[in-house]
Length: 68
Image (tube, rainbow, N blue to C red; front, top):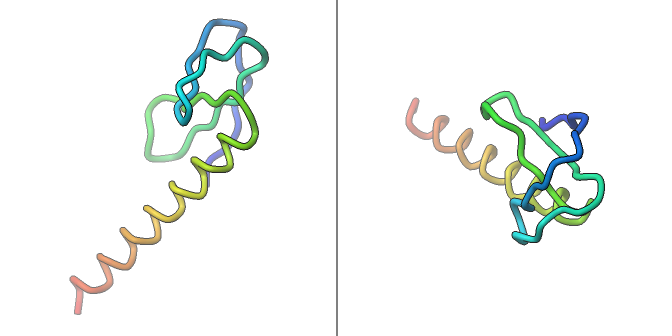
């Protein structure tokens, strides 16, 4: 599950919508990613998390089918 990091005040670009983050960015990191993902708003972060969880579930289903 992604967890939130503290962010410094640099210019970042949102990973979902591509906008430049001017305020306080939301940074999430997962166990399988080396660098954090930056978002401009809570809505963009929630959208990314939903898609990320969907991909993780599909990976798990695929492994179960291969083992049979």
